[in-house]
Amino acid sequence: MIDIQLTAMVMDVVKIVLIPIGAAILHDYLKTYASANGRRVVQGLAGISAVWLLYMIAGGWDSLFGTASADAQMYAVVLNFVTGGIIWALFYNWLYGRFTSIKNIMPTISMLGIIFFTTTAAAAGRDNLVQVGFLLCFAMLMHNLGGFFIGYLMSRWIFRMDVQSARTVAFEVGLQNGGMASGLAAAMGKLATVGLASAVMTPLGNVSGSLLANYWRKKDARAAKAAAAADAPLAATDSLSKGKLS
Image 1 (cartoon, one colour):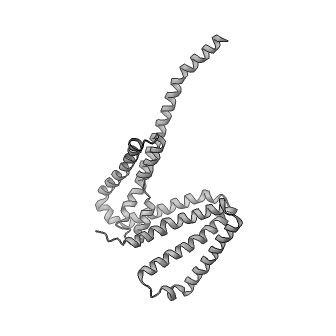
Image 2 (cartoon, rainbow, N blue to C red; image 1 turned 60 degrees about the vertical axis):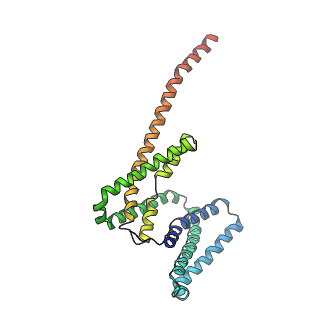
Image 3 (tube, helix red, strand yellow; image 1 turned 90 degrees about the vertical axis):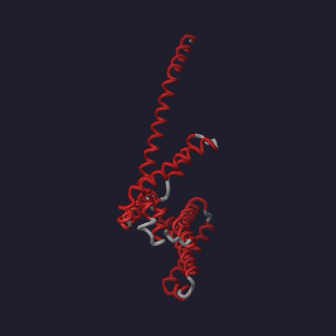
């Protein structure tokens, strides 16, 4: 049995997921929609955030939260993450404006981060992985394939979606965020136990998802080829008829 503190886990999700997404949305706002006044507001918020973080570093944490309760300290950490997200959004927007090629580098950095968490979880839980490795792989495979299967069938049979939309839902249901799961496990201090599932799921999902995508792509190519072959005699007949009429 693994003890999980719900509030702490929710705060970890906020730090790992919501704040980075919020920073990305803020960058997109600055890049696409922000007026001069809107940009000044964001710059002002970033300046306040920078002053706040400097104050925290200079001893403000001890004076404000040193004797506070654990919950108060947890919320204060989240606040610090929010201020850091605002500063990072503004800095990345400035960087993006001068080096547009950075958008091609960021996916690689993201991949390296996921690889780091996955390998760290596998290394930390090596002994546990040796004991339950086969069963864990089987469970993760059933979880993965079940997501593909249920997501596709429910989309087609119950919600009457078109094939392309149903395939999209299948991928969204079947593929899980192993990087986030590893990050949560690390934040909980249970990387060697809870983190093992994500360490197995990440490469397994990448392989199964790639195989499924490749299968559907080839299936579409075969269907397009068959349709073209079926249309060829009709096109030839039509051309012949036009030739006789002329």
